[in-house]
Image (cartoon, rainbow, N blue to C red):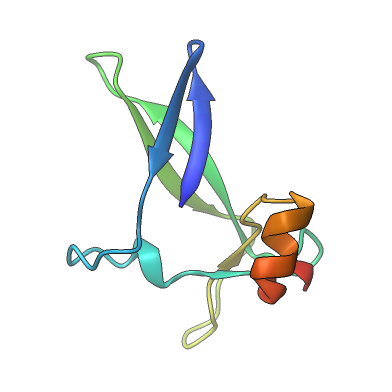
Amino acid sequence: MYEFVFNKTKYCVDATEDDGSCGRLINHSCKKGQNCKMSIHVDDNGIPHLILVALRDILPGEELLYDYGDWNRSSKKAFPWLKT
C-alpha cells in the first residue's frame, strides 16, 4: 500500500494484487540504501500518477529499492522489513 496526498486529496495505491505491473515487485530500503524514489507525475488532465525515479545509474541485475515511507510504530512492528 502506498498513500500520498495531492491537491488536498488522499490517495492509496494497493499493490497487493498482481495486476501484471512490475511496480509491486520493488522492495523497501531505508533512505540511505534506496536507489529509487517515488514521485508524483501529473498528466495533461490533472490526474496524478506515481512514477519511480532512479536516484543514480542502476546496474544490470541490481535490485530496485525505495523507502516505503511508513514510519508508523505499529507498521514497523507488523512489518519488520520497514526497519532496514
